[in-house]
Image 1 (cartoon, rainbow, N blue to C red):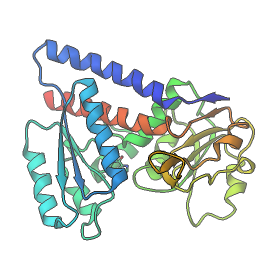
Image 2: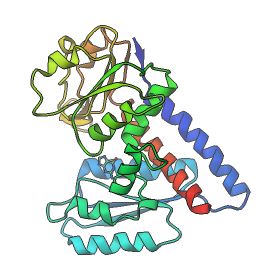
Image 3: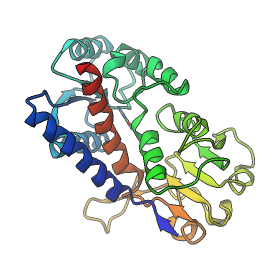
Image 4: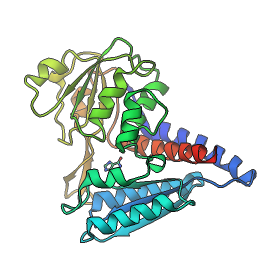
Length: 292
Ligand code: GUN
């Protein structure tokens, strides 16, 4: 069994980006600038956004954090997005999800200028992704592709089973694994809450990508020998013995599944850090496209 070490690979990617940024600075060019909008005080979301801002500093990007109260109206948020769309100094921005109930996610994502949509959630970018056109690929699926590529995991002709059909991870992942090229050329099954006999499907899988948010969902009996396992789950599970009061737990029963797997991502230290590295990569791309 080999670990797909997202922590290490994400450090490599950040070093590569930092080198590019250092050259930009040396040439007197503007460096990439990412803005992140966060609405409300959800602890996990604040942590994720904080990590994104910190990663910007690490590679030499500029960053702006926009904090808005949970009581904000949809209109106020849309106004802020228009401001960011118009701000020439900002190359790309994200609106951290989930948003409060009074706000329609889809309306917000549609309001982002596609050329600044470094999350790749705008329908225009999502459509381009599905059509193999150059665009911003959503950071988590993009990070998984990069991890598979850097470990040279064979994907062509393999059966990839994706668990979960979220717009952020499962759905784009299922499209990307079936695209032409490497990583890709997989035969993909997208499973979800209405799927029957899921274990019958997962035991046929060469590659399993779980993006469910149910701790320890994927058991050893659901996996065939030598399968490749990618765990996107990052659920906070209460734990009094931990100073934080919780532990981050994946969708995979790592202890038992890792004994059967050929490759497996740990949680934490697998897909999570890759997501942040790929957001930086998309922001760099946004800057480069704006320069042309
Ligand atoms: N919430 C969970 N994952 C993500 C992500 O990749 N981007 C944004 N904007 N919100 C998220």
